Image 1: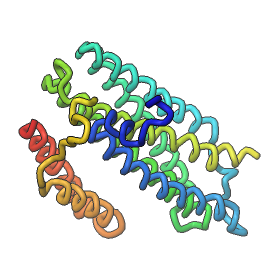
Image 2: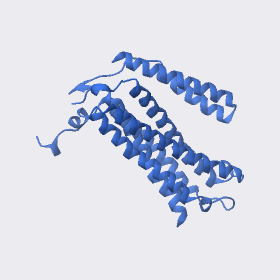
Image 3: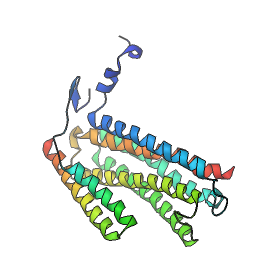
Length: 197
Length: 62
């Protein structure tokens, strides 16, 4: 039987159980994000007065976004080092991934602080409600990802991944992290880039 | 074939209370945001406790 006509089960059997669990979780999260993105698209300009998408600083958020997207690259490099059983290299790229994710969250916190200082709150109007809900929900996912990555880093320093052990856990967290980075491409486009048009 | 299962034989983790404690911690954290930060603090402590317990359990299993 050639690859194209192989049953779905053959593909599933090549994926580890933790990664299958993560993909299932991601499927439900994708629907959740889809609903929030649709709500934002409808409400972004629905309020006749108050703040609108034009208040957003696309340049600064774009810079912090590049850091988040770069972290997808660094976690791939971490996985490659792990596949070669280069523990020091794995830990180094993993820590850099955590640093890049944390930098993105700091950027989001600074953006929120600036908006709060201007008196903009969750309940100010429909734009701010949908903006804070969507970007805050994503930020919470980044935070959870950082907790998972930090847990991996602690275990890496404890020597848990030496000799090919427990690599599936790393693959599962990396898969989740790619999703968090990937969904930000859509959120950034809809929330920030759309504001430039 | 992955390190975790052969064809048709999937390894599943044993029953555990930690996922429920973890979920409770996250829920309490958010409840605290709209009520009192004391709840958020307790939620974070529960979350940290559950992660430590959960990871420890998985390490003991393998």
